Length: 398
Figure 1 (cartoon, rainbow, N blue to C red):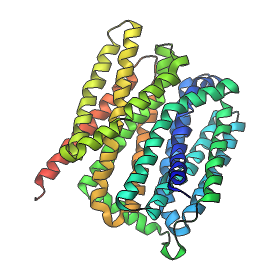
Figure 2 (spheres, rainbow, N blue to C red):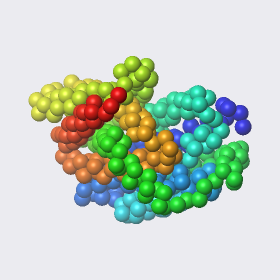
Figure 3 (cartoon, one colour):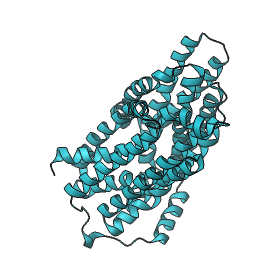
Figure 4 (cartoon, one colour):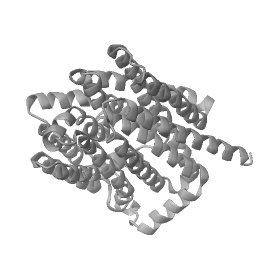
């Protein structure tokens, strides 16, 4: 496999997550009307269930791939993912669709986590960073087009067709991987899966102040991102009557906010990870608070819509300047258990973010108040925790 082909395969595995979440956004009104007409807000839980499953699966997929090899875990995850998508496609009950999405998320954790381990197996140092950067650059473009793809599938069939697209997408990437990529973890380098080691790593991370705080703040930042994703389609549809243009606006904002990682890379060495996160959360307090005030002012709808678009871009941009830095802060003292620490950090923050965002999303009442208020409160808490992290660093000996 050439490097170009390898990067394309890894990017496609990463893109499974973005496709599975963002392609569903245009389908939420139709799903709500068909499967939960008495409370259409419940359709948002189709996104939450997937994220919860993915977060839970992140706990174990990395250690399992260390024990059984990379390809078997990716293949098993893909089979689970496709089987759950098939169940959701055939279901006529929202509860069954939610259960299927939870299982689908569990399956998607395989490609999400193990693909990065495959890169680590084959490359190291700057070459590994280069390969990951190129793959992630391709990956960041995918959320921009996923809602448009979902809308196109709905236009050709209905919302159920999106689940068939999930199966096809996963089938292509899995067969590609199975045929073209050799196993990257030799049998002699494998380590048995031991639950006590996972528990010990969790205790060690919880006991370390900067690691503990970085996980908590990352959870809050993901909760803000998930809250926006859960409610944004309804905001476009119900408040601004822009449901038809939603995939276009969402894609444009995703492309613009993708530049946050470039800005972060340019300034992080000079400014520092903790300061960037603290400043980003402080700015979001001001922006979300302003959005709350603007929502009560009765502005002309068109002007209000453009203000909301700017704020939505800032929320997505904030994710690009916080989550990666918080990961790096948390991982820095955990080099001796890096793989396990990465799995735990990703799982705890993802599950926690989903659990925090879900009840906020269900509060949607035809205004921006629940969305802006939820993000305002979460950003205040995150900002306070980052200030505490700064105080802890100041007390440490140089």
